[in-house]
Image (tube, rainbow, N blue to C red; front, side, top):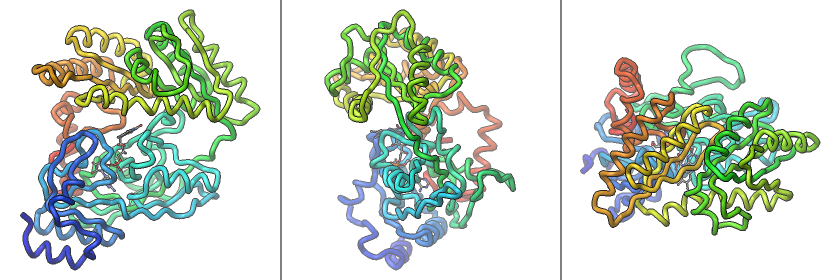
Length: 457
Ligand SMILES: Cc1cc2nc3c(=O)[nH]c(=O)nc-3n(C[C@H](O)[C@H](O)[C@H](O)COP(=O)(O)OP(=O)(O)OC[C@H]3O[C@@H](n4cnc5c(N)ncnc54)[C@H](O)[C@@H]3O)c2cc1C
């Protein structure tokens, strides 16, 4: 229950169509793609930076928990209001400025979707590098808060490499600006990159200055299949040693291939046990040579087939197949656990063989796919909902997966973040002294701990 006085002030701050009080409506803002769901006490839809500031000052005064929400596509429960309180739904703070072509940036309010930003940037021949598969739905604020990326990160980087500066409001309602409008700048600490990846626990981002990259003249998409996982992982390390990085290097194991075989019109040999999607980009007249170099590097004895997409439609078909994987997995195993671990690229073969051994040990299907060029593998544990011990088995298996990843110099999450679901594992990766320093930083930004309580560290 929220204090009457707070509700009265909120009603002054927000017109009736920007605030939800009805329980049935509030439920719709209490879940994300983790499938956790909690009921917020109130939901507001700010349309200005000033409304965000005033809301945070108010909630800080009353000690009310605030969960910032983009579009709830996150997979870790980070946008779920665990402690009730107020949900700050950012979807209507979504203005996008005109691209500044000379200085290669674009300013966007944080509730704009990734796809809308890409469209605006493309109107002047540019793109913003981070390209999560959820781009049509997810917001720039959500992308920044999770450092969410996608296939292009291998060549063009994540939000941390593609943001010049931020406008934000701290947990106690102070307005801050971070970063610069230039591609160089080293005055003060780098708060831009501190806020990126902080999962809404330090400040609410209201606007971002996004670094733009010119659209390439041409793109070439290759689909390669292999008779074994080992052969595909050998090819990955060979491709990564090339002087010209591909713009995407995606991987799927046999389980993943089985899931998508019927989803798209791409010829996949029956014996295929692993596949790679490799994309190169550049000037049109250099693409033949770049594709040939990739094929040479990827072409070991166990290469089964290679398809060089000869039209934009065929390339799109390949990506449609890749994008159908997450929904296909969810249909087959509604209770799947989806991790996004990362290891150095040279350790991918050991990670994949270790995962195979764990799948056997626990008699638990594990389907692996992901952004191999970054060593970022989405590991999916497919739980049988009818098996009583499935949850415990998966938990034990997950524990061993994280031990394996850390033993291979990896990290627990590449782009999905920690949220609620991985909190207990954080101290395995980050030592106590460093964690203590992080908690002190949190206290500087959010002295009363109202921002997204119970998440990340
Ligand atoms: C089908 C599907 C495909 C996906 N593919 C990818 C992928 O390829 N790569 C990838 O990285 N992720 C992917 N995701 C995960 C998810 O889409 C991303 O993490 C995305 O960035 C979340 O954005 P959102 O707007 O939905 O944020 P939400 O889920 O609403 O929130 C996520 C976190 O961001 C915080 N937050 C949101 N807005 C702000 C703000 N303005 N200021 C401060 N904090 C804020 C929230 O508090 C929360 O902690 C996928 C998800 C789905 C469902």
